[in-house]
Image (tube, rainbow, N blue to C red; front, side):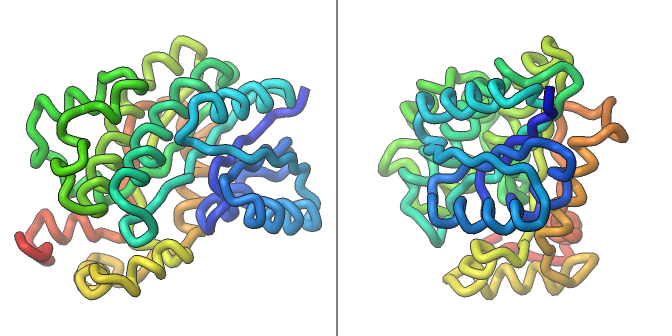
Length: 278
């Protein structure tokens, strides 16, 4: 039986992770954008990878459950990487919450039912979630951690009017990703599997470049310039981190978040960089 690596979202990070960790495995690539899915699948197949594709809408439990079932039919699901998401420049708050908040919660639940013993999952969160640590009320964090997935979008603090802009929706969602991974670690552990999150900083993907060109671009560039590395991240940086969390050198790591941001959060927390409005 083949080992199956599922990559949900085939943008810059997803493709890089598939290339880094997919050799010798059955790759199941999934995305909402069928054109992008076909392009990446064709490129990887041409480079010798074993690739299957399936369209998925992560804001639909039925769609995610169908993807998990398809993965299990292909073989032992030993790796799942969830990179799918919308950024503040790409979508309004409601869409971000549906994809980035609800979509991740559902994926953790559905793939927690099929992940193989010894398997590992990785959710791509964001340093935006790390900036909120200690800033959200405790009851809000508890709700983001424990509210059943089907009730998440009904929480009072994510309703229209309570979320002032897409950036806030994104921060709430990404903090929730970190918290839901912590909570899911026990469920996955019952199957002998692990799950962690990665919180990237500013990464030079098409999505990242879109954000840099937007209204928050100047402040983002300032944070990068003041960070310990002083550079943008690359998809390869995230792929290397995912390979570690998916692989045999991290078997005692689960339910944690790996911050891969070039030192931006450290610079902000120590006062070397000041966030706008802080």
